[in-house]
Length: 65
Image 1 (spheres, rainbow, N blue to C red):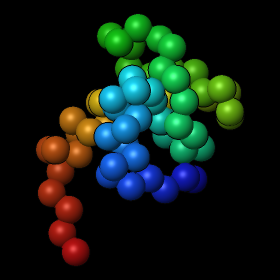
Image 2 (cartoon, rainbow, N blue to C red; image 1 turned 180 degrees about the vertical axis):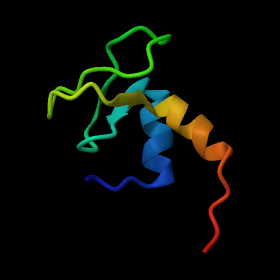
Image 3 (cartoon, rainbow, N blue to C red; image 1 turned 135 degrees about the vertical axis):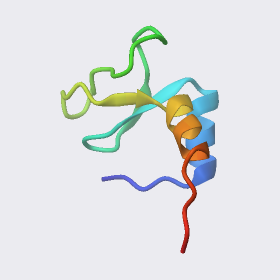
């Protein structure tokens, strides 16, 4: 799994990229924006979520330490 900083996630969202929820690879999101998951170029699983959607989800979650 690849760890990303919030800044890296924001950069991926601005670049309209996605992140694989299986292996963590950051990659171009080639599917239509209306699709929830894309196919990962690295591991072959259909688990790539748009970085923009991940950022939206994080806004709904409060992380306590």
